[in-house]
Structure formats: structure tokens, C-alpha cells
Amino acid sequence: MIAALRKVRTFAGGHSGWIGLVLLAAVILIVVLAPLFGLPDPVRNNLRGRFVPPSFNFLDLTRYPLGGDHLGRDLFSRIVYGGRVSLAIGALAVGLGGVIGVIVGLFAGFYKGWVDRVLMRLVDVQLSIPLMLLALLVVAALGPSLQNLIIVLALTSWVRYARVVRGQVLAVREREFVQSAYAIGVGNLRIIFVHILPNVLTPVLVIATLELARVIILEAGMSFLGLGVQPPWPSWGRMLAEGRNYMGTYPEVSVYPGLALFITALAVNLSGDWLRDRLDPKLR
Amino acid sequence: MSRYIIERLGEALVAVWGIVTIVFVVTRMLGDPAVLLLPLGTPEAQVAALRAELGLERPMVIQYLDFLIRAVQGDFGLSYQFFRPAMDLVLERLPATAILASTSIVLGVIIGSLAGFVAAVKRGSFLEFLAMTVALLGQATPVFWLGIMLILYFGVNLGWLPTGGWDSLASLVLPVLTLSIFVAATVSRLFRSSMLDALSEDYVRTARAKGLPPGTIYTRHAGRNALIPVVTMVAILTAELLGGSAVTETVFSWPGVGRLLLQAIENKDFPVIQAGVFLIAVIFVFTNLLIDLIYPLLDPRIRVTR
Image (cartoon, rainbow over all chains, first blue to last red):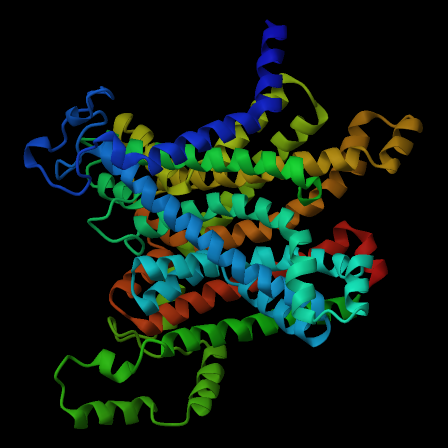
């Protein structure tokens, strides 16, 4: 019994990264290939499909495998297409935040002095505002739209990259190959982007993965409040908000979108932990 | 030591100034408040009169300084919806938010630290596996979904607890449970790893060699040092709970600042938005300050180097 438990444990402990990667690959594949499955239109209403109970028949996708929502839209199709929206927004926001953060970190670490002080003070100020609050404030000002949502999420995420990249650059800039490039007269920008940048990308990749899970959950929260993805576009957060109104009578409508969110976040977190342990144990 | 305190206080003030500036800039990005306030098609003369009344034709720098001075006094003007001082409205809602956040953090840190402690001390045991699996799952669960699921089970299915609102102590149970699960998951993972780091330090080996009882080593030697990152995490979690209060309070129909803010956003009630964001950010800055001041008590090295 104990031996069996130990086996389960070492499997889960040593291989949790693989579980995460496989789960993540599955989520990405389903989401990217969604149009090939012949899913029903995720935004078309069908009053006869209102709160149809789930058939759990994933072979015949026209029979509401996870049931229908309050407008008779197919829940499974909405979850898959909602995943497309969530992952795309997450990836774009993390990418945009990464580009901004890496550039800030590169310049702060390379030029040091007052550039560094000003940029890092900016980081401190941003860190002193709760992220969700900042996001709410900006959306309140600009109005909810896909584009604003991505900008807001990127704004909440650049700081982490900037801090870590700056630290790395401070070390890398003293290395011999950078010093010799400087000695033979290579320009500053070329040193920053050609010589230093490739050497600081490993932790950036790790942060990006860990940020992805956070940003996806934040987006769902914003959409839950009605400040993120706008209807009729499906989004997990929005679906949870809609399902909440029918919680007493049709609980499954709020169960499945959250489950999709949970599985995705878990997969990204596990993959991120795995990546971190492999690439950069120091970040722990 | 006093220099350390002054430096931290200075940093906090810079942060507050930064927040006021961001709030000012973002609000001005919206365009002319006079146009936003009046109904469409208002005659130009009336718009101009309101602009003059609100002081909007003064130079931007003067407007900014004026905003700064008034913000420090907590004066953000009257709410557009309720025609009462915006800060008063926010302060009325503050106790509800504060009780929810503080109870959840205290409970979550206690549970999380215990779980992390056991996981580190009983390394390789089934208990560690259990604690860490639960923590991993807890960390991936979105707080608002967990809240909905708990309401569904304990509120709707079993009917044991109220599903929302705040009218008795029982209504505190589900929101606090939801948030403290989230806090405990984060804290237990962090405390476990920092405890493991501490247990591999030389001073722990020395303590073992001296023949001290394991209980003393775990608590007095390793545990105390391992708590330092947890204290830092409390600051981050405070930010998450306060910032995320809009979501949690919506799930539980909780009458706090978060829902007030959300309502203000829907109605474009800018004085209330400004006051709410300002107050939450200031609370957060001072939580951080408090934690910075606690550090030297936990870690004498900070006292020496500063």
C-alpha cells in the first residue's frame, strides 16, 4: 500500500511537468484546431436548445455534449471558442508586456546611473498599485474592448520582466565578450540587442509562462465583471457571469467554463514550474 | 535604524505621489469632464459655465497641483450619482472589504504556514505529497470560480450557509473560506521551499550537532528565518485581495469598496473611482511600509547592514 502510494507520489512529483506539458499541448491543439471539429456556431442562439442537459456524447457534437446555455448556445462549442479568445488574449498580452519589460530591463541594466534609477522607480510605483485596480481604472477610462484589454493586461505584466532582465544585464554587461565588443568599437544599441539580449532570454521565457497563467485568470476576472471580452464573443469569465444567474436551477452552466479555466491554468503553471526547474533553478 | 525607517517612509510617499499622478492622468485621458457630465446637446454657454465652475480652463499644471493637494486631504469632490463627498462613500464601504481581506489573510497564512511547515519537516512523506498537491490545485483555481462552486454546494445544494450579502457572521464563512484557500495555497508552497532552504543552512547543522531537540531547531532556528519570504508574500497577497475585491465582492454580493468601484465605473462616476483607487492603493502602500518595518525585527541582518 505504502509502496504503491510512493510510486504514485514519485510519478506525480517527478513527472508533474510532463503532465502539465501534455495537458497544455492538448488545450492548445483543441483550441487551435477548433474550426476543424465541426462544432456548432458558438454565438448562434437556439431557443429550443435552452438549458438542454449535457449528453456527454463527444462523438456527435451537434447533441450538446456539455448542454446548452440560457440562449440555447452549445456550451462545449462556447468553451472551445472561449479558450481561443482567452489564450490569444493571454499570449498577446504576455508578449507585449514581455517586449516592453525586456527593453526597459535592458536599458536600465546597461546604462545604469540615472536611467536605471528612473526606470526602476517607475517599476516600484507600478508595483505599489494592485494590478486588478490598475486594470479597472484603465478600462474605466478607455472603455472595454479587446484591444484595450490586451493593453491593460500587458501593462500589468511588464514589471516582472523588467526587474529580472535588469538583474541579468547587470551581470552580463561585465562579461568579457561584452567588454571586448565595447573595446573594438561596437555601438551601444548593437551591444544591447546582439550581444546581451540573447544571454538574458532564458529567464524571460520562464516568466512568460508563469505570467500566462496569471494573465488568463485576470482576463477571466475582468470578463466576469463585464469589463473584458464583450458579448456575444464567448469567454470563460463571461460565461461564468452568465451562468451565475441560473446557479440554483442549472448549475452545470457555471461548472464547465470554470473547469476549463482551471485545467488551463494548472497546465500552464505545471509547465512553467517544469521549465523553471530545468532552465533556471535560481528563479525559484 | 532610523535612516532605514526614513528611507522606507520616503519610498512610500513617492509611491503615493505616483498613484495620485496616474489617477489624474488616466482621468484626464477621458476628455472634458464638463462634456461628460452634462447631457448631450447642452448649449455651449452652459458647458463653458460648468468648465469655469470646475476650474477646467486653468493651466494643466495648476489643475494637477490642485488635484494633488486636494487628494492628499482626501477630497475628490462630490459623487456624480449620490451628490455626496466621494471619499465618504468609499470610507463607508471600507469596513466590509477590510474585514473580508484581513480575516482571509490571517486564516490563510496560519493554515498555509502549518501545511508548508509539515511538508518541509516531513519531507518525502504522504503528508507532504497531500499538502503540496492540494496547494498546487488551489493555486490554479480561479478565486471567483471557487467561490461560485462553494456557493453552489454549501449555499444552494446543502442550504447550510447564506449565498451572499452580509447580514450575519455566517455570511462571512464562504467568502473567507474561498479567499483563505487561495492564500493558504500560495503561502504553503512558499513556506515549504524557504523552510527547506533554511534546514540546509550551516546554523541548523550546528544546532543539530549541539544536540538541540528537533522541535526547537524547526521552530526557533529554521522556522523563524523561513518566515521572512512569507512576510513579503503577505504584502503581495494583500494587493491581490484588495485589487481583486471587485470580483470577490461581486460573487458574494458583498457590500464593499470593490463593488462600489464597479458600480461607479458603470455610471462613469469619476470622483468615486478616483477616491476608491486612491484609498486602496494608499492602504496597500502602507501595508508594505508596515511590513518593511517588521523585517528588522525578524531579521537582525537588516538592522546591521543599514
